[in-house]
Amino acid sequence: MRSSSFWTNTKRVFRSGFLSFWRNGFVTLSSILMMTLTLFVLGLVVFTGIILNETLQSLQDKADISIYFTTDAPVDQIMSLQQQINTLPEVATTTYTSATDELAAFEERHQNDQLTLQALSELGSNPLGAVLTIKAKDISEYGAIAQYLQQQEALGGTNSSSSSIIDKVNYFDTAHQEAITTLQNVTDSAEKLGLVIIVILALVTIAISFNTVRLAIYTSRDEISVMQLVGAPRSYIRAPFLVEAMLYGLVSGIVTLILYYPLTYWLGQATENFFGGINVFSYYISHFGLFFLLIIGAGVLLGAVASYLATRRYLKL
Amino acid sequence: MIYYDKVTKIYKGEAALEDVSFSVEPGEFLSIVGHSGAGKTTLMKMLLAEERPTSGSVFFQSENIHEMPPRQLFAVRRKIGTVFQDFRLLPDKTAYENIAFAMEAAGRSEEEIASDVPHVLELVDLGDKMRHFPHQLSGGEQQRVAIARAIVNQPDVIVADEPTGNLDPVNTFEVVQILKKINDLGTTVMLTTHNKGVIDSLKKRVITMDRGKVIRDDKEGKYVL
Image 1 (cartoon, helix red, strand yellow):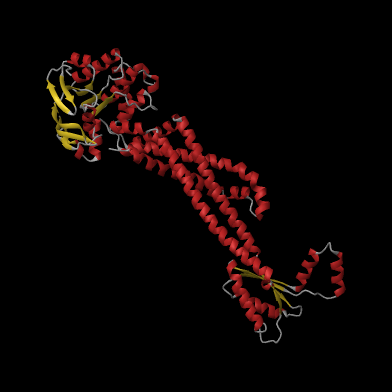
Image 2 (spheres, rainbow over the protein chains, first blue to last red):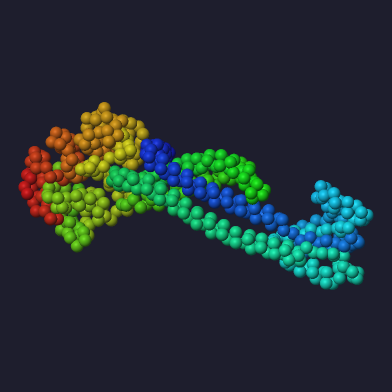
């Protein structure tokens, strides 16, 4: 009696897995449907997370502190204040806009408002001062930066000169300050809520997948006992089920990826308008490799783990 | 070859087997008869290690079946061919594949499978139904596939638990003839049955069981209950 090699066994395992995948039509179909649903939900979780994250990011980007300087503030003093602010660890960037640029921007904003433009030209000189816009690294750090600026102002400016060059810091407008605090709270709770939802959805989808594969293998429990009776080793019985379940995951993953194409295309413009900035379709296309690995990987892994656990249940000596 | 040593099996306080001892010699054809619940099937399951005795031991070729590591047990199972009342074929595999699976499990090569499977199917007169699935075969044909599967690895023993229970008289006769032929070629056969006609026509050793005990053991026995 010649003994079969490792490769022969591997070939047999794959052949057997593919065959039962193909022949158990109804079980295969229902398993794929359930698993596709699972992976689809998983994809939704990922998309929701991305949209939430990007939206928060863009909202956070809108928060800043503007320092309005007096019209006669010397540029070198403004520059030295900017340098000082730049050394603060909380500060990400500072942007300087000169008085002339401010005026140009103002004129452009009001180009259809003849009355305002006329009043401006009658003034004869530029009523606007230079502006320094500060962006913090994190939204929670605006308070600290504002406090620092307040101290600077109390000390009478950036150097020993008697009058302050700062006209106004807009963080201290109550409305602006409240907007930043509210945004910060929303960001925090959205992140927490998002995490909870993701964990719950992930657990539910994993449970669904496990049950689907377990039911598929449950229908084969008699076969497993027959295989044991003819003396098949446990690994040899288990492997084709593993192959079959991983095929469910693979096919479901591919179906899910295909389904997401028209769905994101359809929703792309809407998400771009509504959430500001992110278009799910272009995100999906540009990150397709990542989605492919994630969805297919999740499907195959879920199939493998579920089938391992399910076969273990029916493999008795 | 096979030795049951004071085997007792208790299910929920009731004894399915009580202090059963007997041995089976190589090449023997042993029939075990008894009413339903007499313990015949439990006896067979002990040999396949599907059940563990509450006390006592079962030996196969001088080795205690219930103390073997899994690897050795798989090897022993390949030396025992099994045939059941409900056939127990793999429903998603054709007749050919069902038999090939038993050979694959035993680690046989593709060439051996390709030559032995058609041969053994010819032996049970199913050469023309190789590609049929179990549901496309009659009860008698399914049982013949099961017998072909049981003998294809040239086992030392064939265990047949009520193999004719679901069959009509013609198929019953054919199945018993096949088992007799296998025994004539030197394989030990252990058969349990309710069928008086089968036992009386065999004229071989008969063990009679009642309520978990061996009550008769006759060298050339008849169905007496």
